[in-house]
Length: 433
Image 1: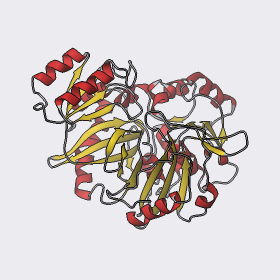
Image 2 (image 1 turned 180 degrees about the vertical axis):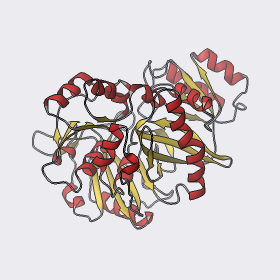
Image 3 (image 1 turned 120 degrees about the vertical axis):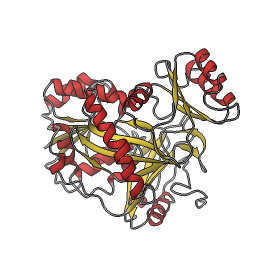
Image 4 (image 1 turned 45 degrees about the vertical axis):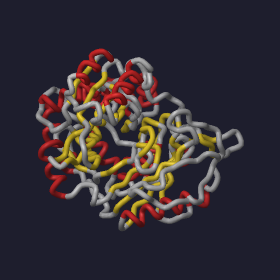
């Protein structure tokens, strides 16, 4: 069987690892574009993940049986639609469904239309319009928090939780005038009520008719310990029974998951792919913060190490739009953690090209998977940093404390100039190195 995975980060390394698990050498996996870690278990091909035509041509030429899409940008550009036009089997959201992530304004209006609980919001097209809304006090007084979001894709960095009206005005100006995430992504901005509570993420597979839930996860977006500093693509994630209790899970399924999938069908885009629902668990119940239409990163790493079923069979059912109800989707009863190691200067201006030491020793620690994200091979054959988030140290264990301890013991083996990470993933006030 020939597989193609689209993407080059830690999420894609975890996908390739999970696809290959339990299969012999007859399984061929290509990855566009891949990284140094993926290259050890798959063929890396130098095709840009957003080059839909070149990817489709490669799939035809290499007789790819199934393609799995990792990142959001190819989905928003219509990669799935292009493959399906050519009769190629691909697992991922089509361009219509990808609007749930590609446009936060579309997603908020979708939630309102289908009575899915979320924060109050207003969509604005200019800083002046935003100023008027803030002045009217729709989202509280001058000292109340408010959330400001860029409408389009911003690699997880287009959301600002402003602690006051002054910070909100600054965020709006940075997004709409200063170009903090690009002009197109911030052509419109969403102003939202700030919700209080604990965050959680619930992901699921869907074939357009049936769905299967994944273990609930919680990620850590900010660069600094204690959730301080700027947002990143994600500095770590956990899965654990404490993330979402059974009663809350049933409420989320009843009031959010099923209405979302039913609403998508009613609006003409039955959802096929991986749906990621970002939640705030408030005193009044769960509220949707955002939709993503693919695995999160680093949530994928923490989730996939717990998968006990055949990921290829699951993704085939998703891609064919039928059969998920007859496909085994089984997870271990363990907890898991992923701690991201990032380059100096991340998330603003990450430094690259530094040699990474200790990977061989780290790989010998039992119960741990090292997923590569921003890595490459130097001309001398050394593994070097090539991006902001470099490695995702991941473990599953009988309890969360054990999984975290394994991750941090492994991190003690690894080093490069300027390596940074959070010591409190899964807990605040974590150990100091």
